[in-house]
Image (cartoon, helix red, strand yellow):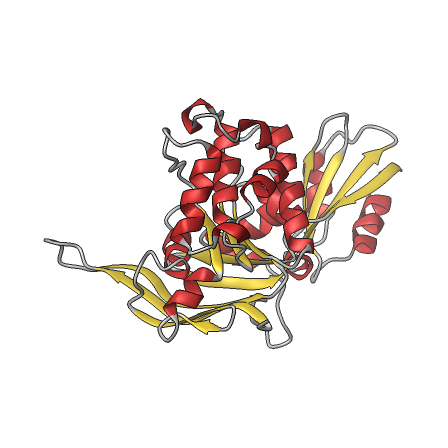
Length: 329
């Protein structure tokens, strides 16, 4: 077992476009390390390079340069073992409609050279709630069932690394929860899981570590808790005992960089940069302004705030800085 399930170094991919003057650069020197046994989130906006990176890891796209090691196997030196160490659940529902789930898994197992006596077709399908659909045509399955069948196909060769590319797209809440329960079981059993999703709350809940890729480069890769802490903004929710008539006067009295807006039910939301302003200063300002507080709570940044800060122009201003003055990445 390798200490890291995946190691990519200076990974680059350039597509040559026929008739075009310029080449399309999809990956710009990506460095990525996925620890063994983790649930690792790979996030980024559309067109950021996530699919290209996943397809290179799966051996479906040839990289332009750089190195990739999967489960300790160098993709260039030992491509067969590298590919056998990873299972990919694609975003597209590419299922043969004329095969049953059981047949689909048997074909997939055959492609990976899994001996008949070592195949776990029934076990995998039952674990994913498809035991009663083993012999039904795949075309009769619902969208959620087809999504789970893709997960089953990716697991036939028992890969130690599983990539889930938008696995819950179009799946209802109940099926989504069942899928995550199974993924947690796999991870508890030692499978390293790499997840891409546009549901940021899923990534925040599921992932130990998150990397964000933007315009072909990894802009951050950190443990989830540390990444959330890198946003320097905090919001104090104040419920005044009385009515605050003029917000403009209060806004001018607040420390520099703090802003105030009204929330429903007469609440005030005061947002401030933690490195410049303390909650105590905010409360002191309110007291001096004659605002009596009946209730106080605070809101911390979530993954959506971090994502927007790192993938929109100028957004990095909200990130905490290191001792050297650079943004935490």
